[in-house]
Image (cartoon, rainbow, N blue to C red):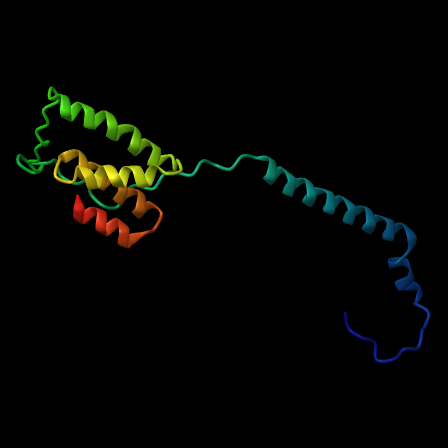
Length: 152
């Protein structure tokens, strides 16, 4: 709004007084009220309508081709004589020890380490060493994990 050049209050002329009369000011106020209500209703209607579902983006990279023959590595499972009573006994001894280490039972780490050192030449001792390496690595003890991996 422009500032008046003078601050002297002068009465309005008769032609201007009719323009700013009481009925017109009520009409302007009513019009402003209706306009503000219409805007409020329009904005609330936008928030009440559900947003359209976003479409999933398509993958830009192509799918990998199907595996040709010979792409899987040939790995063999170590031959364990499950019928041998010694292997069955070692397996039964190793399973609860490894489970206790995983559950963080007090003293279980030392028991499994003793089992791994005692049976270091057998497959079961190597498996115990792997379990100890996994346990050490999962709690961020890299050097002991490396030592157990070398024993395995």
